[in-house]
Length: 79
Length: 79
Image 1 (cartoon, rainbow over the protein chains, first blue to last red):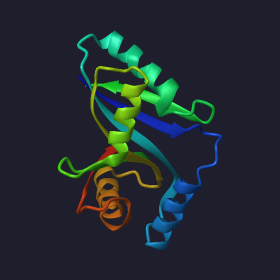
Image 2 (image 1 turned 90 degrees about the vertical axis):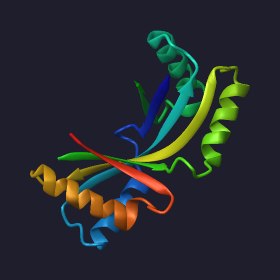
Image 3 (image 1 turned 90 degrees about the horizontal axis):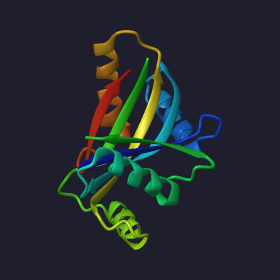
Image 4 (image 1 turned 135 degrees about the vertical axis):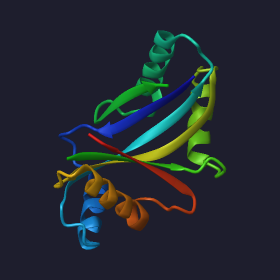
């Protein structure tokens, strides 16, 4: 099973990397660009067939390693 | 309109960051983890109502700034 984990900074948390991208886009002539946020996406090949068990494992991975849950949210998609 | 751009290394390109995550997951006891790839996700608030025009603008942003198309693929989602 293939899973995709998306990790984004929580909405209240300052995102200098996103801000820099937004400013660069403006400077390149893209005027109608508003707020930009950057996050990580992690694609994991998982040897597991049960959807709910996979989801539980992935949540555990996020809590333990993939995300800093103090400042980041994560979302899990299975495909 | 909100857009999400996902930038991943092309499949032939070595991804040391993904590899490190995979090894860390194994070391933490997640045995059934196979290949891991890490990429970027960029959420852009776009002042544009026309879907196809937005998509064209976003492609241009990817080509010019967001992705290195020699080694990276990008995907655009509008929501």
